[in-house]
Image (cartoon, rainbow, N blue to C red; front, side, top):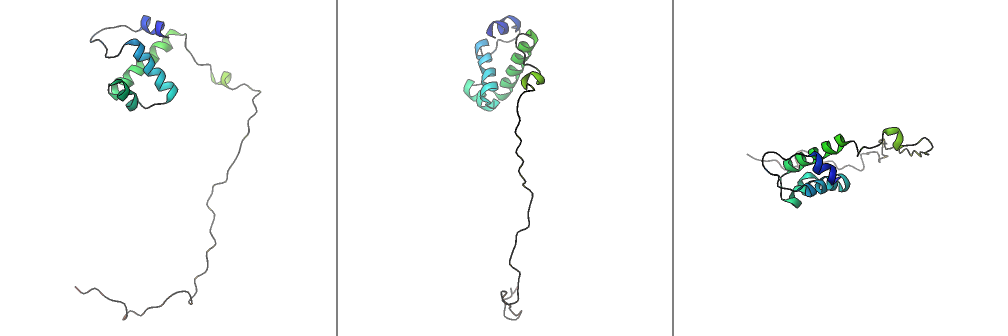
Length: 118
């Protein structure tokens, strides 16, 4: 991967903060460890935007080289694979609650309850 990256990525303009090896390692960390761009940026001392741009550039170069491609959908799941499906019914069910009765409620007269005086 590093050979393809060094051959295909061209240097122009301001020199990058990270070497090609660090750029490749950053991309691999992003793919493999599912780390956020923020945390990768903290590790390398660069901003999230720099991490995003670097990952995009490395991905584009590796895809254009043609050496690193993922197999199609059909190749990932052969037809002889047994699938087991488990369904869980998570719909809402009514809860049985005790019925309210006059004996269980307390009755208060309006004249007994305190009022706010303004």
